[in-house]
Image (tube, rainbow, N blue to C red; front, side, top):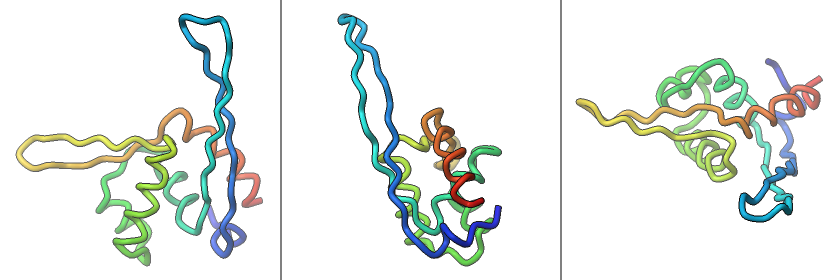
Length: 114
């Protein structure tokens, strides 16, 4: 998806999550702030299709630096938008996938791009 508006500006999206406590009948609402920069939509739209490893994402985008991709992935992981899975076989492999919460960000981003 080509999104020039998002690629030149940074946005703040506040997403609300409603949670229920098992012991109590009360509901609580938490707010998660996500800063949407140039690479965030590209990462989220890519992870919607399938999980990717760090190197695969870097090759997919081409012009992103190692530092910026790591920073974007850490930001998304800290907000719960993506999950980081470490597999330990012959070599350590790290794979990133979209969480259910992360999939709720896709629709607002798509509308912002339009």
